[in-house]
Structures are given as structure tokens and as C-alpha cells.
Length: 363
Image 1 (tube, rainbow, N blue to C red):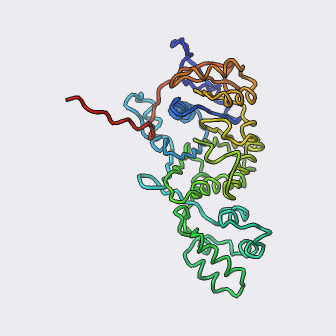
Image 2 (cartoon, one colour):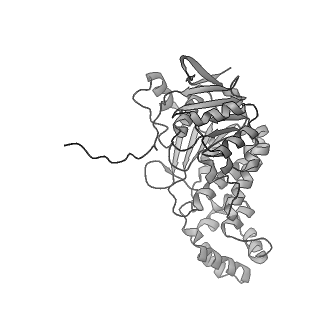
Image 3 (cartoon, rainbow, N blue to C red):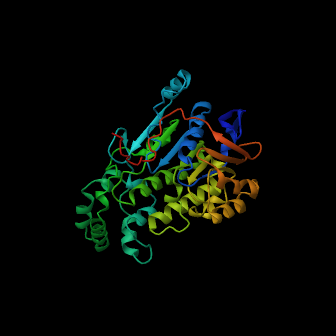
């Protein structure tokens, strides 16, 4: 059995706490309000998975907090630093900065998701929808700038209307498209030890969701290959809301609900991190068998957690309101009994973090 050392028992710094790495084959819910140390603590666990297992990880990272996962701290041991350096860690950036560009192919999306991007309904926009699904399934023709002129030149009025819709929405101007080049799904298929998708640098609000949707749909389409992957979604409320508003958001939420319900038997395991349980779709939350709980004060959230995660007592869950930064409750299949933990130190650099208040310097 491979155990992951994540910290010490709260109140007993000599007693280490370990998680059972095998039990990450169940979905995990990680929750803590702003300032609880949630992202730092999540990094502690992801580092242990990186160093002590062969489990590939896909990290959907809206704030760029894990973009420095390849960089170790000065306090890291030489052995840990060497293992991180040897690990195949790929970082894809959506904005400026170092790293590979985060691109997806429009052609890789399902017909329903393409229609969602173009805000089309299969009934209300039946002719345009039909024209879309009959386009040649070729990456260059669908991603190249010449697609709209080609549609406009068509004798089919539906294709001309489709072209005008694409132009009016300016969809082809989005940075997310690969325009016939490589897509991030090609790298995910290679199963690096960690693939970090920095979703925060796109200009259009739909682009990060489209990037996530393209990858998740691709993984689901190839689920029968049964290749294990831990799908880590930081600030998961951005991608898995209980009340999705746009067609793209609904498509993304539906895909996550499907993975939560059926993905475990195919080796697709979720780790969802967020500030409040009520911000996550209930059909995803209810499928989680592991809980990592940091400070949560809201009575409604505490009641929701106690109702969903019956393997932790209501008293233990309510105690989280008293936690200080870096303290957590772990419960569920990946630990032998519900345990209060003081999280350990990070090995790699955290790219995010709070902005400090400027203070006057004393003369």
C-alpha cells in the first residue's frame, strides 16, 4: 500500500497523517472558504501523488496557481527536487507567460457542443444546425480563416446563415482555437504525470469553458481505453455550477455530471476544489466518497456537508468553523478514520497567493 504523508495530527506534531493513494480511484471533494489555505493544501496532496504514485493528473487551473508545479522550493530535499525535475509535467498557458499555448480544435467538439458555442438550438435553428453537422470533418477547413468565405459562397442558404452567425459572434477570433495546429487533447492522450491547463488568460468568458469541455469530451469519448487519470478542478464552481446559464456551461456541467456518475469504472476520477458546497452541482457533489474540509463558516454550507458526507460526524464538520489557515478535516475512503490535520509544507512553488496591503514604511 502506498501512503501519502500530508501533515500531522492536529495538536500532535509527532503523529504524521497519511492518505491511502489507492483510494483516489473515487471522487474527492475539497472545500474551504477564501483564506483557509485550500489551494496551498491541495498542492501538498498533489505533490505527494506526483512523487509517490504513477497516477497521471490533469489540473484545470482557472487562477494559474499550479503553473509553477515544475519548480521546487529552496526548502525541498535534494531527492524530492530531483524527482520533480524528472517528472513529465506539462504547463499550457492561455495568456502571456512561459509555457505551451493552450489550444483546442473546434472539430474535436461534439456536434451538440459546436452548436452550444454557436448558440444554436437543433429545433429552433434546424437548418443551420443541419448545415453545421454536415460540414466536412477536417481540422483545416473548420479552423482556418477561409471557412466563413467558403460558407458564404455556398448555394445553400443555411450555410450562408451559418457563416453570418459565426461572423456575428466572432467565434473564429477566439484565442482558444488551434487553427489546424496541435491541440492540448493530443498531449493529454500521452498521459504526462501532470498536465496543467491555465484557464485564466482568455479574453472571452466562454473560452476557458470551451477548452475544458474539449478535453473532457475527448476523455469521455475514449473512456473504454480505461487509462487512469485524476481530473483536478480548482475553483470548480466555475465549471460545475448547479445553475449553468449558457449553452456551453450546460454542456460542460452535463459532461461533468456524467463523469461523476459513470467515470470511476473507466478510470476517470474527479478531485473538485471549491469555496462552498452549494456552488457545485448536487449530482456531482453526491458522487464524492472522499472529503477534505478546511475552514467553512456559513451554517448553510456546514449543514449541506453534514447531509452529503455522512461518514464524517456533524460535530466534526461543524468544528471546521474554528479552523485556522492550514488546518483540515480528512474523511472518507482515503483515510482510515476522520482525522483533523495540520497540513505539511509544499515542495513546489505556488504561483498564486494573496496580494499584500501596501503599508507605509516608517522613516
